[in-house]
Length: 444
Image 1 (cartoon, one colour):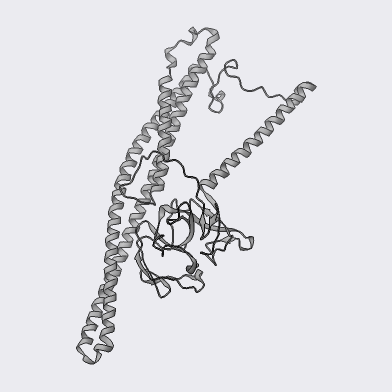
Image 2 (spheres, one colour):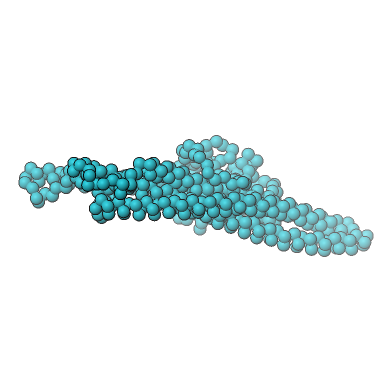
């Protein structure tokens, strides 16, 4: 992954759209990743359940056939077919049960996240209520001071006008807080609707889970019963492959040791052993390659910075490790450096710093940033001022981002970019790996 000008990064290949089983009544970017996992697990559960049904359709009850009446030359083939059919049922039932387990776990995670969000929203409402109460007290005191000053003609110009401006500012702040609390209550209502939906789906999924688990246990019991009836030792069934006589199933040529054969046979056996050893190494390398590809696709990525929008924190040519799973359970925090999809440029990404969180009041004035009326400490700016004159409330599920090089950054201050949806954040940049002289964590 490489960032282009203004810290952009080339996107990964998009996967084709798949069937959706779970859809929230109201959009929630923090919960939707769990539902995506549940969707994927449900697709696997349905597919394996279909295989299970097919196996049931193909299965013949061994007890209904007298094995001794089968011609001697056909007994081995009968055993092979019977074991294959029932083993297919066992594996399909177990796989479907495991996939349904994954569905329940994902829905449980979604429920936990939604409950946590409701708790945070409720706490935020309490904080805003406290702020409104303080503003009401301040406004009452200002009204009294303004009235007293207005009664004294000598203080009207010198004092009352200033008190009036303070009163208006206080009332304006209270008005914004009342608007914010309305938004928060709406968010709580939407979260409650999502919780009700998730609880219903989770209850249904656990019922289905119990049914699939019972089917898997029944299939396992039938499997053991069939092995006993056909006089097959379960220990002989290796790697989920039914045991059958050599005439029915014959693996590759038997292993030959160099010590037990003559010169020509010894040479052939050694070559075979060498070939097996090479094939074993190739399998290990292939598996390691698949693991590396999977980690790169779903866990982390390497990002190369181009541009100066995050200077001096990030310089042109820096190589970073970006964790794609950083926000799977936790929410983005203020100060995090994130890689995100560019809202204003198709198929490109930006790398920025999170400044304001959802539902927070952000104000830029006199070259400084204020969050909910409190000056934001930004030591990473090295004294640089923040350009712009802005006063806004960050929508729920969105984040306000800016580059550290405020004069050279295209970020949320620009209308074309604006606040960033949580779903557009690809991951958190956590470590600089190049140049080696600047190797280290970005959280320091």
